[in-house]
Image (spheres, rainbow, N blue to C red):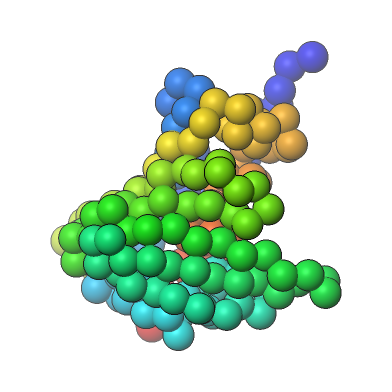
Length: 167
């Protein structure tokens, strides 16, 4: 049995690097400062992060050592996600841990890089570094793109893209 090739969304490239890393790169038709604001302003995060579900931002401290915690409400259940910011370079880079309450102890490292392309567009590059079993699990659950693109600013990359491109 062979795995189907991942579907690539418009303006996105999904690649795997070894058995630990997944990379997603998108071009966003918005200046870098608007993309940065959508990634760091709690009011904006709540609009796109929770896969269309209600999202409570319990904590969001985008500074080195700061804590973030979001709780998604879906189908009568709550799903908590949290981590710590390891590095924050304004308008350029966010590195943080990521842990889901449903899998305690399985901590991934996520990095978002923003590059100003100089023409009002931004290259957003997301990398998830996780344990090999978790990446393999993503591959076995379905198309890599569907699962992994969900991790690009957590499950609503097209929503984020539309919000920052639309102003």
